[in-house]
Length: 260
Ligand code: MG
Ligand code: MG
Image (cartoon, rainbow, N blue to C red; front, top):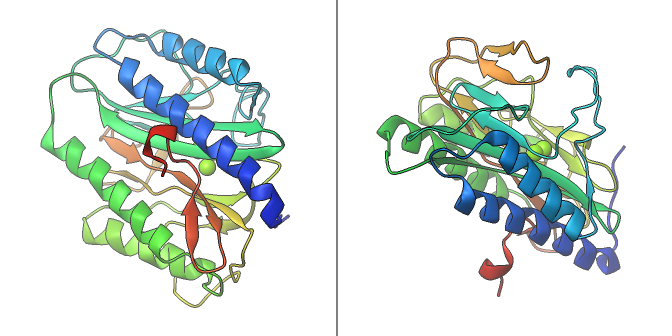
């Protein structure tokens, strides 16, 4: 299913995007050496409920996970890259943490992910990997406009990741967003320009480049949810929800403090 928002629905999408971005920035500020992943989940839950929003994760039970997710945010550390189930684990200096959050506010879903290094240690490989996913995300957003094809975005994202030396996994990628979290079209993190669905104003897309150093192979953790690099190498993930506008794209998952 593909949903197209009317112009009058865009403010609701902006509000959902701001909420997700604000929560992620708040959690990034609190995630320190010694912080437990279950505390991050609890803070996310409190902020989602306080805002009157609904979690897209807590009851989520897709074919690729084991039963309902049961938590409010994905916390993926180091070799974990996607769908990280929050565990009783305390963060250490230099841990590479990815937070992925999707909520429904006022009937519209926003979905965003950020990756960052915890503490004062700044491993150059981790920083480079995070920056590559951020650059790939920016390239995908820059390619998004009415008339562009999904393949144009995939190509833009994949070119940055490949040029940075990362193999690309095509099992999971970006997606349409609307009244539910995962809709068509699928936006692969690599592809051919000029192919696929043609974008039009009112379409919401979640773009989400992610990489694992030196491998494209995932393994599923014993928890039935967390996806890890098959080699145990570090990973990173960046995601924004965008709206296709009349002349380009608007990033919806922008923190309130960064808005004009
Ligand atoms: Mg997400
Ligand atoms: Mg997503």
